[in-house]
Length: 226
Ligand SMILES: [Fe+2]
Image (cartoon, rainbow, N blue to C red; front, side):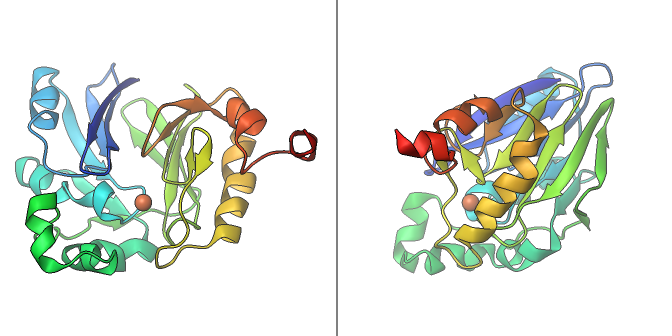
């Protein structure tokens, strides 16, 4: 598996190209905004962009879909159905975050209507990219339709904004639920195994084992007593 991370947008979001090195098939996980680095990276490596795979519908994760899809019109665009409202409402999202229309241009948050989704993620499905097999797990809490992509052979999981090194996703935006997020993390993410490397939508990589030991939001009874 080849993973290239591009930290972009005013929110320092991690857009990733993940490719199967044997077949050259690739996906772009969460294109946050148009970037002059992503397309050349795909071309230079002769990767075939099979899909734009979205973990959830927030603007800093989907804002570059329009531009990337213009270059690769055959690539699928996949999102969970419960985040479709966020996705198709992309041009309005900054206003719901409390920004006023005149601020949008300078912040790079002026969006066109995003292209039509090709299909929706189904909880539990296996999504194949060349020889890579991603298990799709619905993990609501940060948004209603958040999913994660877990590749079990290489023990890597792409968790979007569910879990971060030392923190968890915010739950105060529309559709967020703290209880649901903790439930998703506890029952979907942690059981993958301590040796899984975690690739988050923001910040550095970590492992599930490390987060179980040190993340204050996931602290076990033993940790809390210290
Ligand atoms: Fe988010």
